[in-house]
Amino acid sequence: MDSAKLSLDGQDYELPVVVGSEGERGVDITRFRGESGAITLDSGYGNTGACQSAICFINGEEGILRYRGYPIEQLAENATFAEVCYLLIYGDLPTVEQLQGFSDGLTYHSMIHEDMKKFFEGYPASAHPMAVLSSMIASLATYYPEVAGEEDDDLNIVRILAKSKTMAAWSYKKSIGQPLVYPLNHLSYTADFLNMMFSVPTEKYEVSQVLQDALNVLLILHADHEQNCSTSTVRMVASSQANIFASLSAGVCALWGPLHGGANQKVLEMLEMIRQDGSDYKKYVDMAKDKDNDFRMMGFGHRVYKNFDPRATILRKACDEVLEELGVDDPLLEIAKQLEDVALNDEYFVERKLYPNVDFYSGVLYRAMGIPTDMFTVMFALGRLPGWIAHLKELRDDPSSRINRPRQIYTGPTVRDYTPLAER
Ligand code: CMC
Image 1: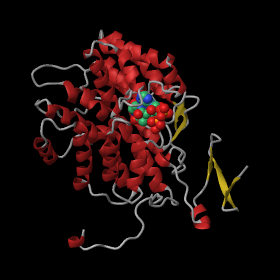
Image 2 (image 1 turned 90 degrees about the horizontal axis):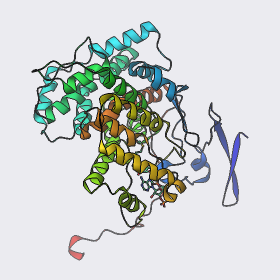
Image 3 (image 1 turned 120 degrees about the vertical axis):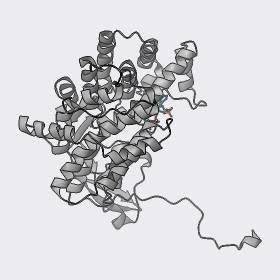
């Protein structure tokens, strides 16, 4: 079948059907309004495809996630974050030389302009690191004005990936009043980040391999997830031909929300709240089920995954291993496991297909690694940057792309005459 039929007011409209490489089908309504005068309405875009994309494939029913065709399980097991960045952004796994060149770029561009250091002095210590990261990424546009051209694009891509790592670690150092730690060229991306986060001038800091490996997996799992809220935001902003820094800064802001990347912070705050309340997790399960209560079980449910979140499966295993290797005995993990048990067996959660998502376990793992709670979403942002960049690049390279501009059904007052102030 290569077309669908839609009837409106007794008239049939033939709509082309687009088929993706995995057999996914979409009814193309691009010309429907022009022909019929009507739009299609899909609040929250649950059934709307905004683009065709070759970057990421998800099958939510079967719990499948692939980057450029490679299963997430294989990438998490074998790849480095730098390799995955390259894969997402340029479409293929890098050769040895390509990876070397790309990794060198990530190293050499990780310093930030000394003048930008002053920005950190201006933020209050209580500043949320997501606010700092989004502002700092947008501010890069003042130092590196965009010039159209492939070479400049590649340079800006590597600058953003490299400098965001430094800016993220510095926002943490600033919040705890410690001196900022400069990047070190001999360290890998993950080791350098951990060093900038945790080393202090007064003692030697050895970056643990366990932490590096755990961070590598976490960043890879976050790296892309097709048209999620923040990626769609990046595409939306970039569609107006706004510069790369502005577009990515908008992505950071969208990710911040608790229904999206901000959920990892909320998961930990929820587990802590349950612990402080005597670990009575069943009370909170009941609250989440109560329609008169606004409380939601953070870290549960997903718009796309209706079976299991493959990222959560990988992280659950990693959580057990890392906690054991680090010798962490965390009461919050116990509560997390009990909640998971309930979700898998409770009729409310089963019926609605609400399973623990990536943010449920990533929060627990970040905590075990010593990452402070309000940095969790920043970690997600660092991981998601290559995905956002890949989507932005795909949009820019697509000659058929045009400014994103949805329609609406107007429900406000119909025309009425202005009444002078004195008569109101
Ligand atoms: N706790 C309790 N009930 C829930 C939850 C939850 N976490 N999530 C969904 N529901 C219920 C919801 O009340 C609704 O019930 P009913 O059909 O009786 O009205 C039903 O499940 C469907 O929920 P929805 O809100 O229509 O689903 P959605 O696809 O619009 O939202 C979601 C998806 C992820 C925003 C939502 O499940 C949620 O708020 N989860 C908690 C926040 C969270 O963990 N977010 C991270 C998502 S994964 C990573 C990422 O995207 O960044």
